[in-house]
Image (tube, rainbow, N blue to C red; front, side):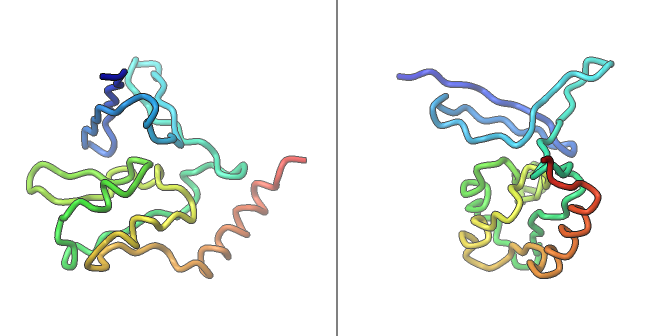
Length: 137
């Protein structure tokens, strides 16, 4: 018997919750703050000084290929995926929770339904963002 934490959040209209042992809680790339209406607001951490919501790195699921096995949900330690309730299917519920350059879920998908942006094209976008948000000295 150990100490457990129940985490719950609503992202893009989907409620996600999990009960996990505290020592196994996954790293979070966001924080939840109350806004002026006392509503939970997800605030993402910057990635190398660039606001995460400006970085177009997140998975896409090919619904025709996806078997809804849920392996991506289990493989992702950042809470990017969820299972929608009606109909039961795997969705990208929180794309900005995805860690930039991580593709571990893609390798877990037995049918190849998960894709990410092309790395060469992404690097060009990232270079442009870096011009707008230069590294702190």
